[in-house]
Image (cartoon, rainbow, N blue to C red; front, side, top):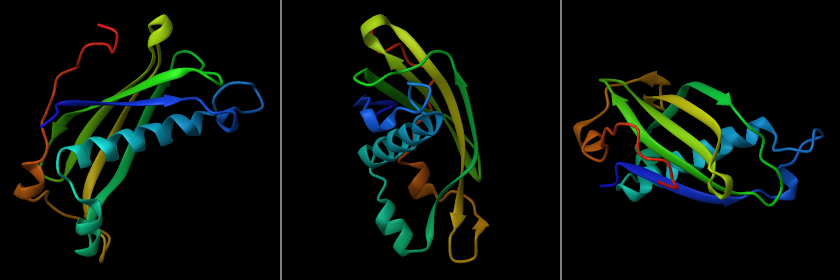
Length: 143
């Protein structure tokens, strides 16, 4: 089981906004990609869960932007689970540009486990918890 997970991404021209840097909504998309890939790497089968009417839903996103990314930048989106309680987990992210050791953004998402058939938060099953590992803040990608 991996306590933290990295997704690498090259900023595409279509991710650039009218201010000539990456649009803020792309950062949210990158965090969602990283969470999904990390969960899959640890054995979470989102399609099987959805077929049973269960899944993770975002309750809250919090992002602090520190620097801008531009087209062509090579990024690392690092994610880890910081906390798990009965109904939810908190996942953190670092969005970095290793070339100059710049942290572009720090983010946190609170995910709740939901019965999608009735749109109600339910307790996280043990079988799901077993695929999750709490981690303290990992080292920077260039450390």
